[in-house]
Amino acid sequence: MGYHGKIGGAEDVVEVRLEGVVKSFGRVKALDDINLEVRDGESMVLLGPSGCGKTTTLRIIAGLEKPDKGRVLFGDRDVTLLPPRSRNISMVFQSYAVWPHMSVFDNIAFPLRIKKYQEPEIRRRVKWAAELLRIEDLLDRYPHQLSGGQRQRVAVARAIVVEPDVLLMDEPLSNLDALLRVKMRSEIKKLQRAVGVTMIYVTHDQTEAMVIADRIAVMDKGRVLQVGTPEDIYNRPVDTFVATFIGSPQMNLVKSIVRASSSGVYLEIGKSRVRVERRELYKYEGREVLVGVRPEHVKLDVEGDGVEGVIDFIENLGSDIIVHVRIGDETLVAKVQEEPPPIGSKVVAILDESRIRVFDARSGKLIS
Image (cartoon, rainbow, N blue to C red; front, side, top):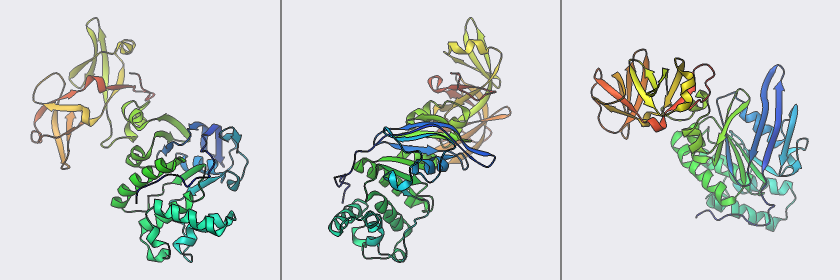
């Protein structure tokens, strides 16, 4: 059965805003001046490594933690000091957290009974949520009779059955096997679109983030580094952390010296020079920068205008071939479809000039 939208009667979804949120645990500053706006009905993914503050951010939005400074707003309503039950939110955790002594029906109905819904309405809503998650034939079973994926669907059904204003998900797929994760991430995206709920989703998996998000907030060390669409984050990273955290294989970052003259601007990489049309680089003449380019934007040839190197290693992944090219002390990775020359061969790596990103070697910030 396909997804078929809201059950009706729920409040409109709301935007979520964090303004100047700071949170410390002892001497550890978990969140350092977080400002973030999540739009009505969008899927926002908080992405970053372990310990970056994404789960703490989610718990503050949920009301499970109080910020030391700053405010949390749902629309125009300041909910900073409100308990979770007063926020009309639902949360799905990493662990499935289904009640083992309750049937699937009773697990899904549990929050409705807490809110004292009448039984006919409970049955109607449970049926709606179960059909949405394709578990309507499991309502009489108990959790020990379900697979991990089925238990996670029960947890999601229980979260949406009350039609929350905001749906919070904290790495909900991390306990599933790899194949099921791939399937469930697309299911969650379809579900969020069908229900139209504002969703904030935490993960450290960049592929998951790219699939599920309308926009991604990349976090590190308690700060939000960049917010943008998956395409923005991938193609226009603001610094080297974002550039290398998103993408597999990750973006190449190779050292280069800027050479600027009346004839133009060149990036000196190893013994080669690559011309770029970047006037903003003139002031960096003679300085070291980091040249960023995605592996799929590197072509290999036996001759041409590019960076000379030697093939050092080849990974054949079936649909793609990953080629490691040694350039002096550095390695440039190319993603190609055709069979490359053998290891040890001299090649020219031709960089797509329009796709080159140049970063400050000291700060890591994007220059061009």
